[in-house]
Length: 556
Image 1 (cartoon, rainbow, N blue to C red):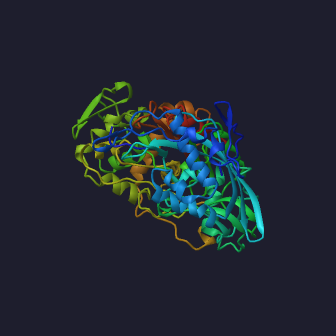
Image 2 (cartoon, helix red, strand yellow):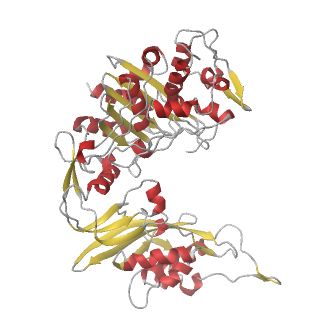
Image 3 (cartoon, helix red, strand yellow):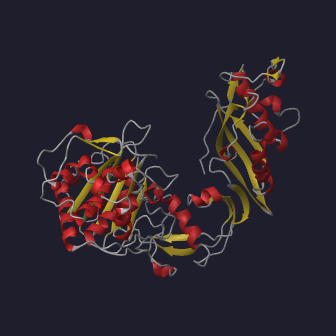
């Protein structure tokens, strides 16, 4: 429904064996191109066919020989420093040449040895061994890469599909590799108790540490070292992706940055997402906004802080506050929950097409009835939900300053069916666990407190605020809805055994191309608020729910 979207370690790779010849590129006289696949001149392109009008465009699946030959030409030329030839062996020589040139000139990488692995269809893995040298300092560099061979537009000739990740898997469009004085001194990140935070101790925090260095490296009193780094271009910076250190040639002197992370809770969060690649979770202190723990099962991108995903029915917390304020719902008044409701030309339905006859709004919230919310769309203005998210919950204003890169949600103004879909967390609404943990924190305390990882006193930055709070009546009803859901609704199983003052809401967000929805869960217990998502995991109560509930228990 609605509009929906959603330094690699060295690996030992055996050389490919083709026709009984080991596939290895070796620097040295008499080798080079002919050593890569053992094919020599015989591995060159097959003859082209022509017509009266000129060359025919080659079509059809690539043969193994075409894949091997195209990879051979590219890897051999790159290794031997023949940049023009290497670039011409790709399908975009203009884009390839600057990055390949910079590999030697800017990144100071020399003595390159490329060893191809066994091709898988059109994809050819390879390993890289080289040396990075800057002035009198040098260190070995090793990593794994991969390329894919495609038919070039225009003539169908096999060429390497050019992407920056061919040069290094960490590179995106516009990024480049640079070796030199880092410019940004390293930082020593501390938890709230003064213990050092490292990626070795907390695997989820690699991207967080990168962000802390980028933000506070020059302010924390350290001195820069010599490093090989990925320097991000405009596209990556727009996505708030931090520069990344790939190799340290000489250590700088780190400055110190203290965070709000709780070491015990961070360890618990790491344990909860371990082995769950697409799971992310955030835990906050509701009364202050301090981030006590953050963890991602997949360590390459900080989904917990920077994800942009449809939040599904967890969005109904915000929508409920809107409907109650406008007198369109009241906790114990009858509220429609039909099997279907059509609006804007779209037909909406509930999970398993259930309905609640003569039910209350409390029952609809607890069972997460979609049509109970969609049915109110005709009575709302297009910008009502956007204003509620911004003015009460502090979301979707692009002004959070938590201490590292983050995304503070998007609730765009929409109309017709997409507006209706946004009421149940689909349409154009986008959130992450940090945002949804903040939503629960706002309900728990009655006031929005912008989450933060580094105290604003460290650098004098201003935290975001919300322009108003909910009325006492609305807040009381919203808390009761979440409390009832935690005890008797879709969140009950996950929250079983979580005592005290609790509230929760589950969510499942449909995503095009996924068999299972993204499972969401947001909850509070006392002065703690948390939220999590398991992408393509299924219903939130079964997937993200146990992760969030476990952290709330761990918080005491």
